[in-house]
Image (tube, rainbow, N blue to C red; front, top):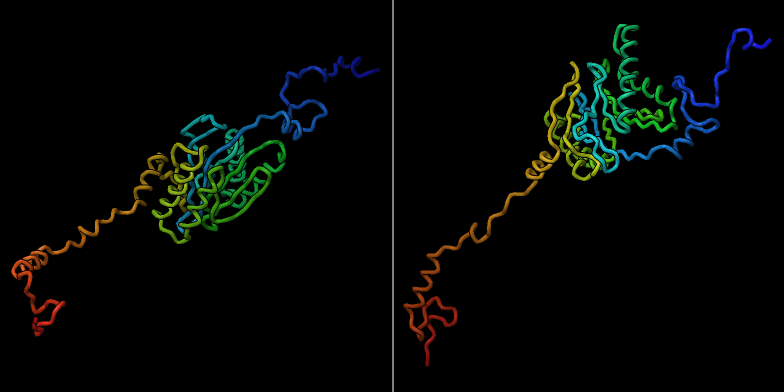
Amino acid sequence: MALQDVCKWQSPDTQGPSPHLPRAGGWAVPRGCDPQTFLQIHGPRLAHGTTTLAFRFRHGVIAAADTRSSCGSYVACPASCKVIPVHQHLLGTTSGTSADCATWYRVLQRELRLRELREGQLPSVASAAKLLSAMMSRYRGLDLCVATALCGWDRSGPMLFYVYSDGTRLQGDIFSVGSGSPYAYGVLDRGYRYDMSTQEAYALARCAVAHATHRDAYSGGSVDLFHVWESGWEHVSRSDACVLYMELQKLLEPEPEEDASHAHPEPATAHRAAEDRELSVGPGEMTPGDSRMPAGTETV
């Protein structure tokens, strides 16, 4: 006897639309379609634009970003926060799709908190980067777009990692992500030193993001600046990018040079003395200092 006759069980209608959400890890795509190919053909075309940077130096890690959230030529939010705290000693910059970045950072916060409760201590920055990379690598090719720089301070000191949604994980001293990153790298490569002072690091980060927002049409708004100390992270400032760029331009303007005639005026007494001497001497007379005729020459 069939199972449906005994338990009065009815098979679900697989051809009609399901009233339930897809299971965890599933994708609501038509039957027989590859999710990656379907998203490439029918998925939305979103143009992302941002400028985020982070660098490590002897006093911690600096993270800075602009605040403009855009989709193509449409500015969705001029005052968004692209630096997201994970816990007291760890934060990260976000670049890519805003929804993906916010979702995966919530997942990372949850997983790190659970590990802290199990092990009794916070995981290192390298462990957090490896965990995030492993979780996102399973969705490779499914149009997930997350590019982040994890900035933190652990038992090894200040640490900086770059993680991308395809599973890429890199450790370094300087990272800049987004459409304005080429302009930011130009400023960072010129002024970066590991033994910088704190104020020099702040000025370098603000200068790099401000120049990038001036050249990149998809970046703008304000400049958020964060500093990760040994005691925890700190939100240093939020400055208007346009005002900051104008202030930097004024500092770089050369001072106007004075006119040479005003700087070295010729003495008027010398001219007057020469004119008086010419008037006292007649047209046919020669003075002993005249170079045209020696003093002892007699005229015939």
